[in-house]
Image 1 (cartoon, rainbow, N blue to C red):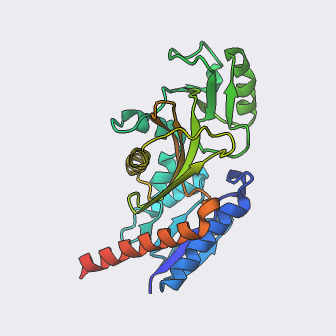
Image 2 (image 1 turned 90 degrees about the vertical axis):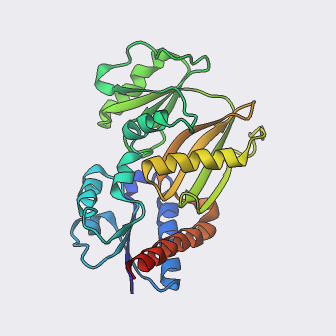
Length: 280
C-alpha cells in the first residue's frame, strides 16, 4: 500500500485562509484513503523533526524558505511522488515566477520589474501605467493584506517599502494596473482539471472571453513552474484579452473544495498507476 504524507501550510502564510487551506488538504487525504492509499497529515512544525522514511507520496502545502529547501534536498531521493515538488513551490516565489512567465511566448503577462527594497522607490518604471501600479512582495504570495498594494501615485511607494522593510521583505515586483474583470482559477494536472470564477461577481462586467485560452495560459504557466496542483489570477480586458497575473501552489480551493479533492486524488492515482505499469 502506498503511504502519503500531507503537510499543512504555515499559519503565517494562510491569512484569513487558515481553515480553508487545512480543509482542502484534509479533503484530498480523505479521498486518497478512499482510493486505498494510507494517508497522514502533519503540521510544518511536526515535519521539522520527522524522517520521511517510507512515505512514497508527499503533498507539501508549506512555503517557508528553510522548510522548502530542506524538502528540496529530500526530493533528490528517487522513487517518491511529490505534489507539488519543493522546487515548484520555490518557482512560485515572485522573483522566480515573474522572469519565467515573461519568457513564455504563449502566456500574456504584465510588464514587470523586480526591485530591491533597500534601493528605495527610485524612478517609476519605464512601462506605461496610467491607472497606477501594483507593488507585490517578491517571495511568498500572501501573508497579510498589505503584501500586494495598489498605488495611484509613485510618491506613495516609499511608505509601502517602509512596511516591507519592517517585515524583512527584500524584493518587490512592480506591475501596471490593468482594467477588466479579475478572475481566479484552479487546476490540477495541469491538463486534468480546470475551473474558474469571478473574484467579485457583483462588480464584474462579465466581459466575454475564450475559456480555452484562459485554461491554456494557466496550463502553460503551471507546466513552466512544474506545478500539478495550482491556482492563480488573471484579468479579462474589454477586448477579451487575457492577462495572467499570478500562479501559486496549493490554493485553498474554498469554493470547489469537494470537487477539487476528488480531482486531485484522481490525478495522483493516475500517476501512480502509470508508474506501476512502467515498472512492470
